[in-house]
Length: 138
Image (cartoon, rainbow, N blue to C red; front, top):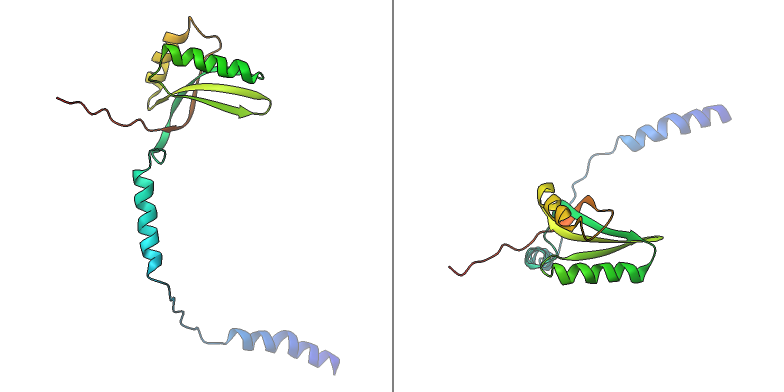
């Protein structure tokens, strides 16, 4: 008796569960959701930091002293005020990287200029902020 009940439970009940008809799903959403999605997309397009791409930066410093990293950054900024710099902290080191270059060749040019001033230069491939196109008043 127990064996028959066990077989019935194992074989028949799952078959009945699978024999159900497929249902129809209706999604009801608030129309304001589409408005919010459109607004978010427009904010991303107009945001200056939203424009990023793969590119290159020149690493000009790597060390564990925070003060030295900021000093190197300031020294670089006085010579190249138009080039953005970034300080990255990966425990235990601070790294100073310069530039937002789309091609490795552009980064290589800066690296060659900096050889006499900074030691241990590297070109790093990473996400960069796309520079805004220069608009000339011709």
